[in-house]
Image (cartoon, rainbow, N blue to C red; front, side, top):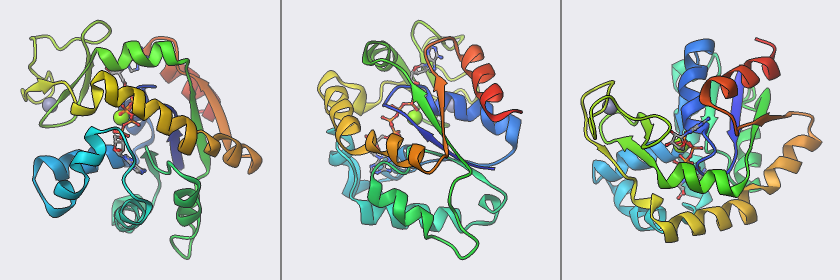
Length: 213
Ligand code: AP5
Ligand code: MG
Ligand code: ZN
């Protein structure tokens, strides 16, 4: 199954993706996570995108499209994928549709439906493992030991783009450049709305019901 997770920053895309991977046994491909690894490694890509991401703006389409094209060509992505955070512009969606001869177009696009107030609460309390990327929340999903990852023992930190000014910018960019994808995929008959407001377990249940799995 080829799935796209679409929704505002902090909607819970990454959190649900981890659960969906267990259910569907397909790779979770997060462009944000790929960029953050590149930044941590101080690779040429990381150095190029760090200021853009910290400021809450989008990395340019050419760079992002080339990255995803290469990732989707790898063996594990042939049986399906969960694309989390890509596409984020109409140009990216059109590039994705034309990637490979057998077609990389999604089977379903999951739209995470959530108001801004809930998004702000989720982002202001989010913490992330620097080593493996596991998401935590200081109220809703704390690690057992403060600032230590349950999964790998890594350091749990606050993402640089979760500062207040960057969050406001990310929401503005989402509305202007990414939200138009909702109508774009709805018109193609691919969109499924999932209520992302309840607890993680309930969102997982809504997701399973929506996909009929
Ligand atoms: P990216 O990493 O994709 O960030 P984002 O879209 O802003 O989304 P987030 O990761 O912030 O939120 P999420 O929906 O995954 O929520 P999460 O599960 O963590 O992108 C980062 C940056 O990279 C972009 O700003 C851009 O600069 C660049 N970039 C990436 N892709 C790009 C592209 N295609 N083109 C150009 N640039 C690109 O959950 C949030 C919090 O809520 C967590 O603390 C979690 O524990 C908690 N939570 C989750 N679900 C629930 C629940 N049901 N109940 C209670 N708490 C919950
Ligand atoms: Mg995420
Ligand atoms: Zn970890």
